[in-house]
Amino acid sequence: MNSRPEPRVATLRRCVKAVLRFALPLLALAAVFLLAQVDEESFRKQREGMVRTQLAGWRWGAEAVRDARVLEAARQVPRHRFVPAALLPDAYEDRPLPIGYGQTISQPYIVAKMTELVEPRKDHRALEIGTGSGYQAALLSRLVANVYTMEIIEPLGVTARERLAALGYRNVDVRVGDGYYGWPEKAPFDCIVVTAAANHIPPPLIEQLKPGGRMVIPVGNPFQTQRLLLVTKGSKSPRDIRVQDIMPVRFVPLAGGSSGQ
Ligand code: SAH
Image 1 (spheres, rainbow, N blue to C red):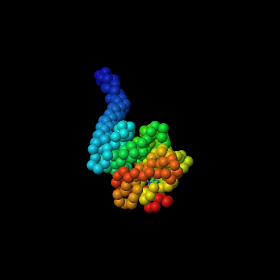
Image 2 (tube, rainbow, N blue to C red):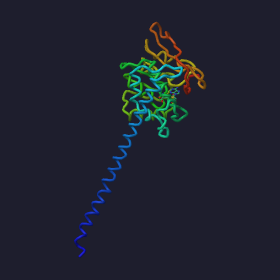
Image 3 (cartoon, protein in one colour):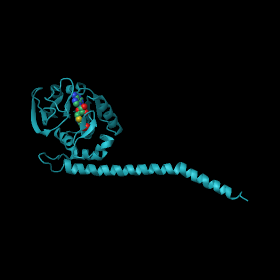
Image 4 (tube, rainbow, N blue to C red):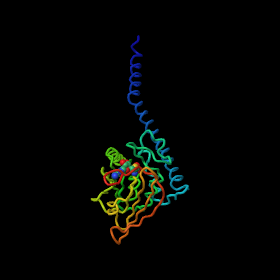
């Protein structure tokens, strides 16, 4: 008498099991994917706001970033992928953020301003000293042919290299070493961006700058406010340089061998 409903019950059970085994995990995956999309869209909006207000907007005592290519690069580089997970909500704030080992990812405005000051072009070769998170290198890489970036703290350099590769920045080379001496094998450079404060302009970096090349570097007492200097190299002699004082800045110190710290 009970024999007829049993196959139906069994079929129902099989269906429920199949749903649990395949459909539910698929639904969960779809939900995770959708949530990630919502997150990315929210980060894109935050990035847009950062460009409009912090970079291109009016700032007290500092000039806005005007170079449309630099602004576009800042719109594209996902800054939230360069900050520690715990600081994700702060990724687009108008300030530097800690990245471990006592170091920081610079404030978005400063990164963009320094990039604009070296006037990057598509055929340029750029050197950065102080890879840190890799964010400045990523921004530069959208504007020049090749970026060579040096980091003195090995774990930071290794993480930045992996991060940049994962994000598809293929024209960036990261080297762990003391950037005071530059990267002579890849010199000369059209642009040099130094993102740690020295108490003098390292002579090897001047030597590795092309005639007509531009370098930005914070110079001054490492534990106080420094001056951001723009160094332009002339073609009359290897020491033919012009130095412009741009603005006060605060950077972590340039460490290493002859950096004077
Ligand atoms: N440009 C980075 C922020 C740099 S913070 C970014 O976009 O995230 C400054 C970095 O310079 C730190 O990571 C610090 O370890 C590094 N640094 C300090 N002295 C250095 C040196 N002599 N050579 C290379 N890197 C150095």
